[in-house]
Length: 169
Image (cartoon, rainbow, N blue to C red):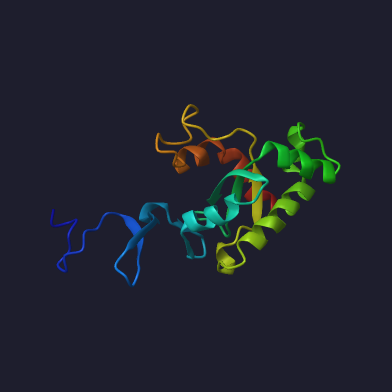
């Protein structure tokens, strides 16, 4: 329709793309998924999440921060690496309190900061929230194409996210 194709012939799909000098196009994400912090900074989550998910302790990750002062990483830890990290910090990996422990959050945040050092400072997560329930198609947190259902995850973890932001002042 005329709304989707502009006067220059560009088709507006809602995707964020990078066009290389050889003409190839790489789809980087969706415009509607761009995080806009309360300070007005725009953070595309896909590249940031890809940089974080390579960490051995991270099984799954989603970044959040819409209308918030900073970005937070929501992490489903990899079970074996989580157990090692907890052991090194004197924590019980099976105890739910370990997921909220300040030492554990700081240890993983340090790894995240190293993995995201090439990103603008405003786009680097300043806190981490652990959730022990993996995101799956079956629990409604992923699509059949294995993409995160961001709104669903944010809704289900809303209370924990709110506590995280309010605890930092």
